[in-house]
Length: 123
Image 1 (cartoon, rainbow, N blue to C red):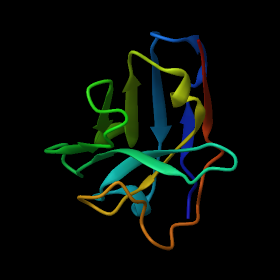
Image 2 (image 1 turned 180 degrees about the horizontal axis):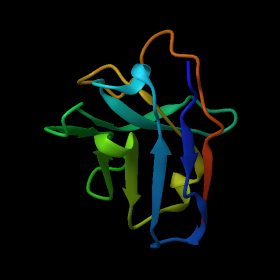
Image 3 (image 1 turned 45 degrees about the vertical axis):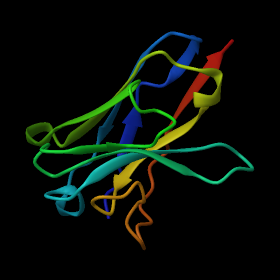
Image 4 (image 1 turned 180 degrees about the vertical axis):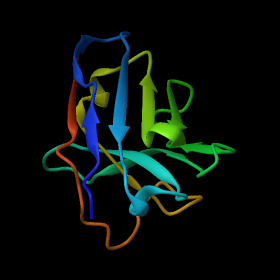
């Protein structure tokens, strides 16, 4: 499987914004729900946003609802995560992956994880 390539992370102050990008090319990512999850060392990973294959619906974790927006450009095999009003608790490594549609969980058995992109929010 081809690994997704995440980018766009960085260090910002609380209230700031970032736009993450994920290039996910290959058959594994075509026509499937895609999502973003985040991981903090020592904590369970958290799925934060999911988007349908045709961009007809999106789903968000309560922790980011109203602040984050997921989108995709299928022609460019890219998934985006616009993150506004960032909080220190958003600090994490962010990854993109195929997700189970209708949930904030990545597909069972997906193991082609990318390097992720680090987001750090200071208070």
